[in-house]
Image (tube, rainbow, N blue to C red):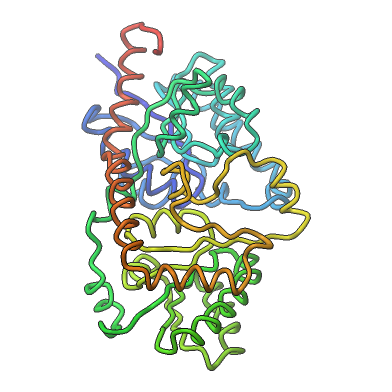
Length: 388
């Protein structure tokens, strides 16, 4: 009697849990009796995933915390290794968390198991030497962006561009009116969304700068209003304390709802990251700003190979949106750029068209496309064929 397909997944963060859950649903269309196990979160568990360790034990950030937890993390990785080898798992898929997953994938692949990775690390941007380890660690890299796949092809690493799940979830045509209704905002006002980051250190560094920019903009457009969504309860408290020192500013702090806030606004001032991608998919003019400590910036500037930091510009291969980094992120320069985004209607129309084209490029039905690529790997191995 044929044994059910066994797929190991290791998702170390909430975003990975979301990707993993959607992928489980799509993979069951190929293998109805599939067994999923490894490490997953609540969404994956609700779909019958067998998590061998709690997901929160992998959710460590920064430089110091992982070193403090290193013995535990190594024990977990060794436990997963032994389990997947003992059960002769058909495929192991690391979902993001590359520092943990790539080492596990490498060891398992050396044991003859199939290994793949979902969500490429930013190897194309910095520490490009990691590509050699990735080439040894995976039979396939599932990428979210076409420029990532191009990079892997240049280095002869098997890849599949599957698109970005956010591009599937966000409608091609945003509905600003409905978003304002959800947030109980008036329809006739002009709003700027300000997104100073999701980490405490980012908010401490970028928050005061963004509020200074808001003050500058009010001198030019006295009727302008501002919205700031908080990423979590801690950031909400931090931002509330910051706003308490600026009672004259017409800023509304919104708990969560970052998607609705951006959709409701006319432009966005943000720090770089996935927020820029979401703003692009919502067709919002934006200005990207980022600062970090002088020593950190010096080090990063020596390592980064990419000409851009924001995903809209990386996807377009040109400067679609302004990026003002470090010393260039001044109140005057940011204010002038935001004012241009708010007032130039011809530029706005061109930007919306460019963003729409990029949205279509990323709208690939990511979960089903990823499932099809992985099923092809598993089926080829079952037939005794080599991985292409």
